[in-house]
Amino acid sequence: MSRGPPTLCIKLDEETLERIKSLAEERGVHPSELAAELLYEALEQESRAAPDTAREEIRRTAAQLTRKVQDLLVPYTGKLDELQRTLAQVSEKLEQLGEEIAKLQERAQSPPPRPPATQTTSPEARAPPSYRRAPPGRPTAMERLRQQGAVFQSDLKWLNNPPAFFEKLRREGAVVMQLGGEYVAVDPEYWAKMERTLAQVAEEDPEEAARKLPRPMDRLFRLLYENERAYYDSIEKGWKIIPPEE
Image 1: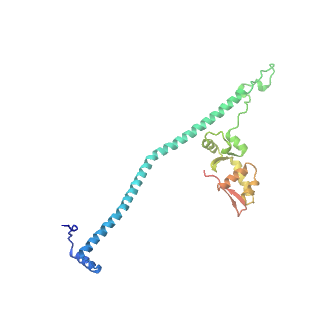
Image 2: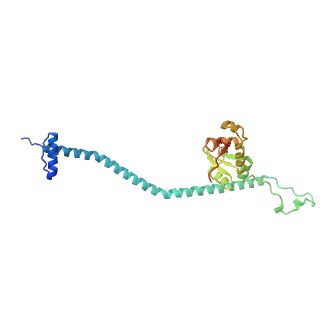
Image 3: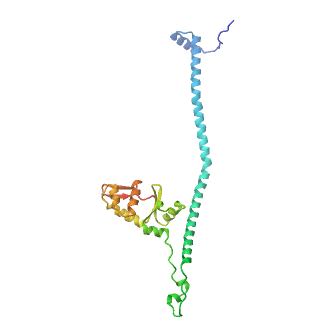
């Protein structure tokens, strides 16, 4: 003998029972059938809402993990910055040491002074060693910059630590910036001269304007224009450049 579907008994208050009876009459079904249908719909909605709840829980867990990882990385980030500054200082000291060694080698390779032929030598030769004129040394990086006007990283293939080299020039007063993926240093007087020169160039086309400039000012102007740090002032009929932030 086959058994029918299981039976579930539900106790309802009078108001809810009357609402079910009224709705069952409108749909033309028995109240018990309507109650079962409403239960199925509620269970279906619950099953659809479950994945959304799970996804929200996953998002919250991921956000918490992200915050914890960031909290763990913050102390190490500060240490890495400090290490980078220390390396820059060490590199600067090594560069200064290299310059001193080069000066010593140059002095060692120069011929020794000739001994005086007689006792009647010049006043300079009779003077103590501390008053004699020392052989000229190599120019410093800042002195070379003043001679050239501008220095480009792409021309200095021998540099082991470009950031430290250009940071040293910046501390000594040079105008230093990054243009097109390379460091560029400009002598302050040369920068002011370029500003005055560009203000008098009326050609609005950048290539025509660059042809009016001497070297290396034309190369520097092209880099400034390509990196949106030079623009044509249509009111004053001249070019202007944007200096780097301090």
